[in-house]
Length: 88
Image (cartoon, rainbow, N blue to C red; front, top):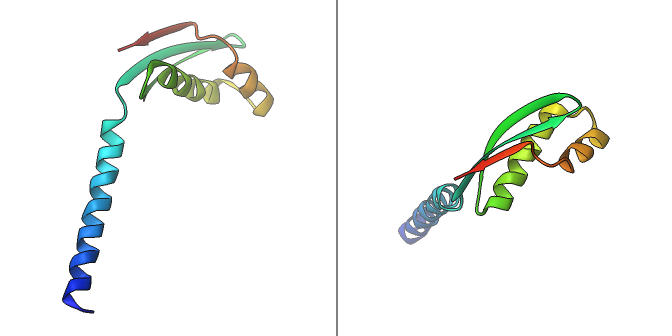
């Protein structure tokens, strides 16, 4: 393998690692803790997102996956308004 090819592969690998680190740390600017009550049970979860709506939706998805049994209940839970939401 020529030396130039090794250098290009190294630069590409470094760029990929840099992009992954930037993507995972630079996008989340809002953190939300929400509590969802569904079928008499409550789950409180934390999630981060680029905006408040995204963070709340992600936290609700996590909470509903804990509370619901099956696809139909999960959809119903997703349409339930959060009992509380605290975003920063």
